[in-house]
Length: 124
Image 1 (tube, rainbow, N blue to C red):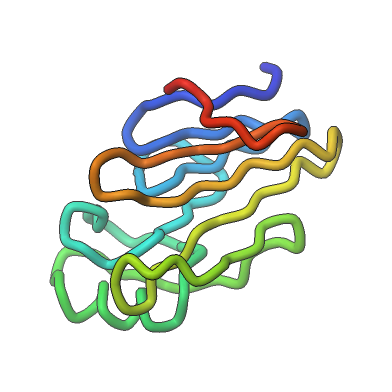
Image 2: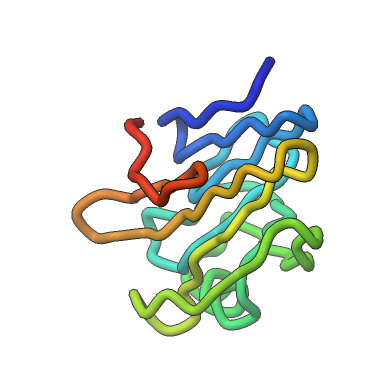
């Protein structure tokens, strides 16, 4: 499968290196990124999650059916302060094979993924 972005259980980014990233979602993915610890972003079951330290701590306090273990992101995923709530982060993802960049920023009205050489919102 080639690179693509789609709305699934959260937002799913498939990279050219055969890696699937789930952004604020659950399901079948290689890497899970949690932008913030609102209850509608927390899923049940144990999860290894790329997120801020504060988001992991808040997530553990907010739910009893989720075990959040924060992991450091690979070098091609950068977390940036997002300003939505305490601990929230935007994710800047660079496909290691193609160099294509994706930026995931949670927005209250609709989450957005920006990608490509020109910064444009991708349709989901």
